[in-house]
Image (cartoon, rainbow, N blue to C red; front, side, top):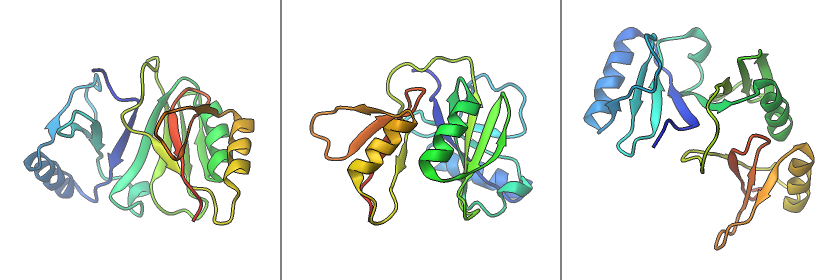
Length: 179
């Protein structure tokens, strides 16, 4: 199994907090992982099932995200992903370059959504994926049509009572029912 295309980054508040969190996660069964990251200021780990995640160094932009600083998605074109996901979620695009795009809730709360350019080609189903919930009162079929118009593709799966789509780069996501 190769590196996951989607992973989470965990926020820390200090070097001591980062060390404590790595120690606690290790006690829970996580292990350090090498995904070819080289010498970086964060710690790459894998949960007991092999899903990678990062314990970040303290960063000012993550002080109010909560424990999950970001959901990171590998992609070929961060600009295209920012366009799609910004429109799909109504999240604010904070940064877009050829190598990365960063989005966050329009209310400025919660984790960031980061799209990181990678040469890796998507193969198979993502082990980790996004779930999207429409606004209360939205018509589910109209939401599917809107997402398709933005570039999403429906996925037919037997025995699933919710809608599964893929974004323009083939990353699966679930469209939940509006509350």
